[in-house]
Structures are given as structure tokens and as C-alpha cells.
Image: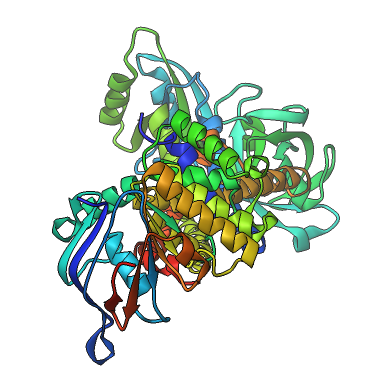
Length: 381
Length: 226
């Protein structure tokens, strides 16, 4: 083998182009802040979409039936009248039907009234295991009848309510008998009712919003969906995966472009910081660069050293930023649960890779400067 | 063929009205084992001559032969390859890389020349011992005296066993004892290792040690062999 091991030799050259600690610290802090910004946005988006995935992705119901044109749970209007519900229930191949009621409602603490009011997405379901029920109860129980609700814990926190407290739902009194998790969609939270009790309070919900179907074992869900749509043109039928994907799309479609733009700006800011630091280092280290060039050190080695330096800065900043994001997520979970951050390994890896790629790109301008260093400068004292 | 040969070399520096003829038809040859002095006032073209002879700058006219290879007919990449393998430099202020230890400075040159890890380590250790720097291998340049720094620079210049060493004012920043030691060292290595050494200097102490001397004035060699 010719030469020292490439990494060792590159690290030697990288060390010879040492960066001033104060500048490096500033750059690392800047990259860390940018990473924090991007990671929090990604985690917030992931928090919402993964909530929807957990909520609607549970097995048991293969098909979802909605009024014609409605394709998701979150942004929907229209209802399915009782005759249609019965017709679907009687359809061959349908092993079971759960009705789901859905409505936007106002929630307000009894004592504080409208001043503290907020809107929520109310869901009527068949406790304890009916379709669209809460993913998990962290306290209390499922609602059993009229005047009882299970409320998302983030909504309860923001309203200053606890288990067994009373609140007004569209002006009607109800008691919080359960607190739920996995029901926070960032822009809104879920409040759960017993479907029969919600029907009795007709003014609250009205008719059925969706039907969740169990399909008989020997029936293909796709064929049943097509048959139902053919027989009932006023209905749309989706597989669980389709309904889930549509609902996940709806929670993020409005914010994704904005988040993507802000994330891009974050990466650009980090890249500019690294580029400025490297540029100033190259200027400071012209003499060393000239010596390296005169000694015959390959440009590729020096370029690798500069990129390695950029990557190390980026890695330090990204590591610090991700740590800060994780700490912020833990703090929010405890003190501000309305903001839910979900950190997933694939997201963190992607954020790290994007920042490292940005850092590598940021080395381009400093490398142009390195390429122009004249080895004759090594002779000037 | 001698390791360093220049024949009627012309080199212009600068552009337009600021352009000057730094070398005017300079001819020079340094044999293996010879220490040749390059003397002359500041601005006479000594550094330009070293740069051209080492292949750092291309000549505008004339022929330059380095280690038996024609630099004047070589591409920049070929000149770089030849320089890595066959040339060692000793600069005026040692120019050690301040973030690295003495040993690491030497390894940078070894790596540039393509020495294997084992050969580089063995040669570096041998040179550090021979130059009395074994105890200082792990120290950074800032922790060395001027003489120690320049000896470390000499070790760096020799680690890849070059055929040619160019030294630009190697004793200018040293006191008289250290200056004498470094001059003697360069003389010794030229003789013992058969290296052609070209030293640009104002230091009169080198005159006693040099085989030959060339004087440059305004880019022209005005004095020949002694």
C-alpha cells in the first residue's frame, strides 16, 4: 500500500488546518440551532401523522364507508342516513358494522365559560373497542352513557381540566371520565363519546358520519367495496389503508410546504455558517496551505480534510441540536402536551444526512480558494 | 545528468506594466553530494530560481532538469509527482505546521511522497534520532527553539530520501550557534546521502561549507563556480 492510511493522513492535514475554537463554537451553536428548528418541525409533523396512523391503522375494520366524496375522517361533512346504514349492514359479506359519529364541537370549562373555550373534534364510538375509539386511556375509563366524555389529555391540559371535572360541550354539561393519549392532532384534539349517548343527544351529532366494516372471512374487501359503491352511489368505500393515508394527508397537507420551506432555510443557514467558518479558516491558514502544496500534498487530500472539517462541525452541531430537540420534546410532553413531538430514527437520520450534505456543499467555495493558494507563498516569511 | 540542471532559463513575474524579468537566461547545475550556494541581494531572483528549479513555477524559456527529468517538457501534474518523490524543502522560518507535532510534520511529507506507513515511521524515527530530536517528537513547533524547529524542518525534507533539497534562507532566523549547526547539517547530508543541495542565503557561514557558489543580480547569474 502506498502512503499512510487515507483517513489518518487526511486527519493529519485537517488538524494542520486547525479552526479557531471560538469561531468553531459559534458555528456549531448555529448549526445546532438550525438542527433544532428543523428537527422540531419534522417531529411535530411526524407527531401528527403518526397519531393518525396509530388511531386509524388499528386492525379489525377492513373498510370505511363515508358519504359520497368524503375520503377522510378529519375534514368531512355530510352524514349517512339510517336507511343506508341498515342497507349496508344487510349486505352479503359484511360481518359487522360500527357506526362512527363525528362533529366539531366547542369545549369550555364550566367555571370559566367561553373565555377559555376551544374547538375539538368529537367522535362517537362504541366503547370499549369500537372503530375510531381512543387509542389508549391514561386515566379513568371509557364513557358509558350520556353526559360522559373521554378527553384528550392535551386538550384537558390546555383547558385546565382533570379527570372527573365537568365541562361544557356545545353548551351541554359533561363529565370527564377518561383521559386519552394518541388523540392530539396539533391543530385540534379529540373528545370521545359513547355513540348511543351521542345519538340521544341528537342536537350534538345528528346522523352517522362513517361506517367501519368487518368483512366476512371468505370475502375480498376490494370486491365488497366495489359492490357497495355500485349499489349505493351516495356512498364512498375505502380500504383501511386508503382511509388512513387520506386522513394522514389531511392533517399535514396545509403545513407541509411551509415546514419544508422553513426546514430548507434552516439547512441553508447552517451551510452558510459552515462556509463562512471554513472560508475564514482557509484565509487564516494560507501559509500552512502553501506549505502543504509545496511539499506535494495532493489537493484531494487537502480537499478531503476541508470537507472532513465541515462534516465534523456539522456532526457536532447536528448532535447538539438533536439532543436539544429531544430535551425540548421531553419538556413539552410534560408541561405543554398540546405540542407533541415524535422523534423517529429515520427522521433523525434524514435530518443528519441533509445537514451533512449541506456542510459538504458549503465546503465548495472554500475549496475554490484552497485551489488558488500559491505554493510560492511558503517561501515568504 | 546532474540532479539539478538549468539551462538559459528565463522567467517573468507579474503582468502588464508591473511585469519584471525575474530570471534572465540563468544556467546552473548542482551535482549529487554537492552543496551549492545561491547568493544575491533581496529581489535578485533567488526564490524564483528555487521555485523554477523545483517545478513550483514553470520557466518561460530555457530548460530545467530535475532528478534527470525535463520539467520544461512536463505537465503540472508530472511536475507535482516528481516534486513529491524527489524534492525536499527547508524554508526560511521552518514553516512547520503548528497544529501538528514534530513527528506528524514529518509524516505529512512522508505521506505526500507515498511512503508506506512502516517505512515512514522507521525513517522518521531514524532522522529524529540522528538530528537529536528523538525526545521532541511529540512536541509542537511552538514548544521548540528556533534551532530545533529548523532541524525538524530538515528531518521533514529528508524523510522520503529526496535526490534534491532546496533551502531558502534556512539560517536567517537562527542565532549564530544554531545557524552554524544547520549549515553543517546541510553540508553533511549532501555529502553522506549524495543529495544535491541548493541553498539560497545571505549567511556567510555557508561559504566555508559550500562546494560552489552562484551569485544572482537582477535575475542574472553573475558569478560562477568557486
